[in-house]
Length: 261
Image (cartoon, rainbow, N blue to C red; front, side, top):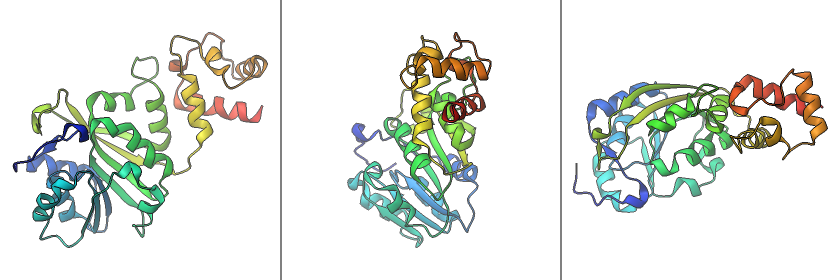
């Protein structure tokens, strides 16, 4: 890889293995008709492989010092636009408006912005079709965690509320430069709907706010005792039940029961 001054503050861990880069693009199931948003162009290695397969690619990169490296790598591609901005500071509607139709995200995400990026687009985009993202292995496991396990929580519920989720491959830490401390996973999220409900997210966050407490006690932050007892009785829930015992479907039924109560 080029003589790059890696910046720890941007969580830069780049991939140069062409077979892996092609595999990530393959996992995304993009075609020559697909429009793609890449988050973090890095050295442009994944950018190039995406551009070879898609119709249109817009890539955001926070590190302006990589400009010459990226532009040199994609010089033969005329379907790419590189924007040097922090994507977390860009209005999602502004990004959506750059695409005529639905688009797919492909990204090797820096670990420190993984959750903010995922929620930004799941909650705010109206045109997102799927996300194929490289994330820390632990985060991937949390997305797919089952009830009654320690990894099960807000991320598990909310990601699966919006998307069908699967891990397509585990990527060993040795595949990155510089090498991170942990392995990663490629995760594909196929969007089920774009209907964001802030109150549902608050409901889930409150339900898991104190894991050692019962669901009943956590929900006292949102409802009075009588309301909770009434809803629990309707659904035949014990007052000793904990949030991690409920499935996504259980939570949605519970949430709707409170709304109708």
